[in-house]
Image (cartoon, rainbow, N blue to C red; front, side):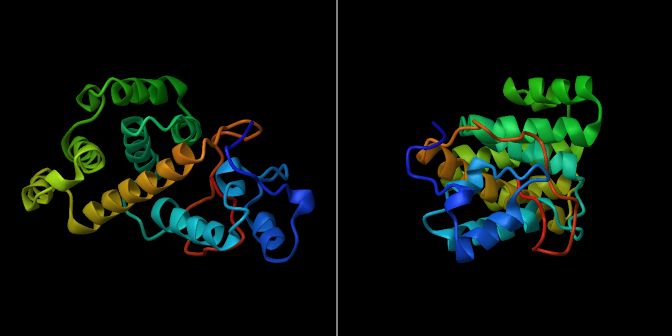
Length: 202
C-alpha cells in the first residue's frame, strides 16, 4: 500500500498528468509517491514541484544544499514524517559523500540535540525551524533578531523560513494521506538550478 487514496499509475495517465509524470520521473522511470499522490489533481503536482525546486534546488540560494536538507530533516522529525526523513536523509548522505558524517548529523537531529553537531548560524537556524514547526503562534521578532546575532543575513533567514514552510506543507500532504516510500528510489534530487522544468523531483 502506497497511500490511503487512489493513485493514477503512469500507464493509465494521459494528457496533462502524463506530461507532468514525464517531467518528474527519475532516470529509471520511477515516479515517487510524493508526486503520484497528486495524480487526481495534477495541477497541485505542478505547484508542489515548482515550490520544491525553488526552495531546495535553486542556484540563487546561498545556504549549502546539504544544510537545507538538514533543516528539512529537522522539520520532518518534529512532524514525525517518516517519508520525508527517509528521502532527505538519503539525499543528505549522497550530497556529503560521507556516510559517518551524515549519520552523526542525523543522530544529533533525531535526539533533538542539534548542538551536538552544529554551532553558530547553523545551530540558530535549526532551532528557528524547530520552533516555527512546533509552536508557530509563539514566534516573535526576537527569533529573527537572534538569527541575525548568530550571523545569518536576512536572505538566509528567508531561505530557512521557506524550507521550513515547504516541509510543513509536504509533511502534512504525506502524513495526511498515508503516503509510504514503497517503490520509491531514496535520495535522488536535482542539481541547483534556475529552471523549474525538466528536473527530477524528490
